Length: 399
Image 1: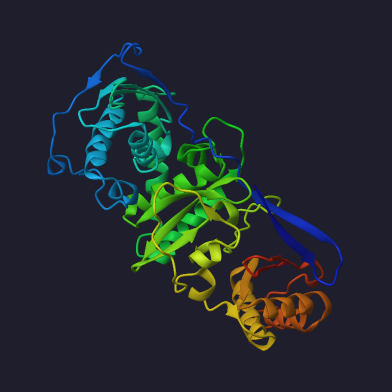
Image 2: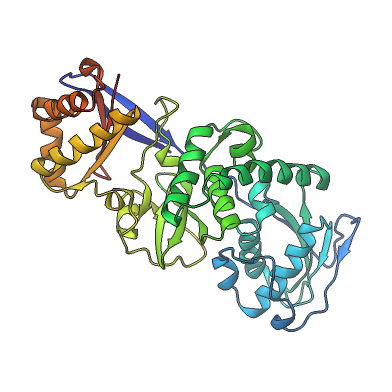
């Protein structure tokens, strides 16, 4: 999916496009199955568990991690989740299922595993065979298909952990909002949207290869959040094709974060957008739809939206002048290249567009802030981009 951004040079009719997008997710299981009249591939190892009570197998591996998908399984599904989880973790070729589940159950359980387990965020085990009773339809064996060896996966996890731990170390002392922003910014600055490469749909592609698609971005973001105990889930949905992003919890409220769509293509490597950072359901559903087998928490707060958090949501040209002056002044003091703001409604947005294109008032505000900060800008090369859906603006400063 391509997300179009509009970019203008001040007082110029030239229009450029900054693009971001996502490719179709490769999350189909590619399932093949056998009834009890057929044979599965011989296994090297088999996992068997005799647990009959959910109390005996309540997972300890979640720790502080969010486990929305696991929580929405019924008791039997949870028991089987743990059997399959343990089997995949140990790289078993055959896992015996000791509880009554059907194909629909298995699909839901497996979806929960590949979108929850930390090792599955790095290299998901997407394909499996299963064996079932031809009369009852009950599944009693599954055979996961591993695309890499156990040693390779362990090495991949170790490499990712080294990078992830170094990223997390930079967030010590930050609150949850600031930590999430740091994760968001790190991924954007260190990864390029690229559909080529075998790891483009996992966290390894982001942290090690530095290139990924939307699924890789989302898995990497969740991996970091899981490690610091910030509740975070993957969201499977659509834009005009299949897409994946995240939903996170801060101070008891949930927010959508689409790191991919905040990393526009055809922009300088240091460019970061915040149009899709901590959105409500109402905001994200302007151009995203959820197509997930699990019920998502309601996201109805705007407290931690980027533009609200930094008081960058403006309701008039007069208010914008003040916000813009302060933003540019601070940017000039710190040699920052970008300033951001958001209109509170479509009418204000249209007024800002008109001012930016046809009026020198905002140009003069930028010039004044630059002069007062004693850091002269190249006023002939300043440009702005805007997002019609999110009503957001970015000013690109040139020194």
